[in-house]
Length: 317
Ligand code: ADP
Ligand code: MG
Image: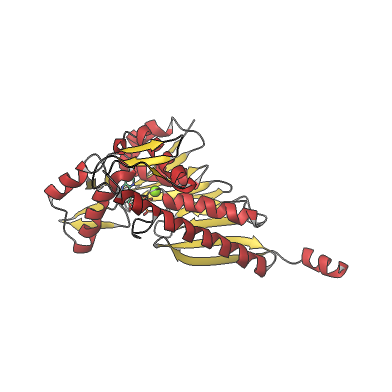
C-alpha cells in the first residue's frame, strides 16, 4: 500500500489534450495531470456540462430554453428561466446598457438574415433589414430580478447568445475541471479561452494574439483569467469587394465592414467574450471610453491588412 502511494506521488505530470465539436465549434481542453484516468473523467464531465448548456442556449435547437423564450415573444408572458440563462441574460443586458446597444442579444432577426446572405453570397434586401430591426432592441427584453422571469415585449423577437454563450460555457467547464482537481487547465471554447493555473514550471499559457495567421503579433503569457477574440476577419460575406461580417451593428442592422479583430483579456470568459463582440462594433476610439470604465480588462485591436496592420492596446485603469 505504502509503495503504491509513493509510486503515485512520483508519477510524472503529463499533458493531456481533449477535443470535441460542441456548440458548432471546436472545443479543446488542455490539462496537466498525473493519471490519464482522472484526466479523462474530468474532461468528460466538462464536455457533459457544455452539452447541458447547449440545450439551454442554442438558437438552432427549437426545444432549447432560449428558443422557447423567443417563441413566446409578444405574447405578454413572463417566463421563469434557469439560473444559467438568467446569469447570461442579465450580464448581456448590463453590457447593452453600457454600450448603448452595440452589444445586443435581441439581434437574432438580423443575424438570421446575414447567415442566409453568407450562404447565398448576396446582401439581405433593404426592406428585410428594416423589418428585422423592428423586432430588435434590448429595451424590449424585460428582466424581472425578484422572480427571475423574462418577457420579450414585441412579436417576432429572436434572442441570439452567439456573442456570449461560449465564454460562459468556458467558465463553467473550467469550474468543473477545478472541482475534479485539475488546476493547470486551459479551456478553449471555440476561440473563447478560460485559463486556470499555468502549466508546470511556466509563468502562464502562451496566447498568440494573431494566431498562426499573424505570427508577428504579440504573444501573452497568462493564467487564471479569460481571453476572447472577435472580429470580421474569418466569418463574412464578400459582395462587390466589401466584406460584411457575422457581427452586426444593431444600430444599422448591417454586418461590420471594418476588418477589425479584437482580443480581450478579462476576469471571466463571459465578460471577455461579450466585450470582444461589443468592442468589434465600437472600434478602438469608442472602445477606449468603455474600457476605461471597467477594471481588470485589457484589449488588443488589430486593424487593416497584413502590410499596414496596426495594433492598439487599451487597458483599464
Ligand atoms: P465568434 O462566434 O466568431 O466567436 P463573437 O463572439 O464575436 O464571435 O460572436 C459573434 C456572434 O454573436 C454572431 O454570430 C451572432 O450570433 C452574435 N452577434 C452578432 N452581432 C452581435 C451584436 N451586435 N451583439 C451581440 N451579439 C451579436
Ligand atoms: Mg464574443
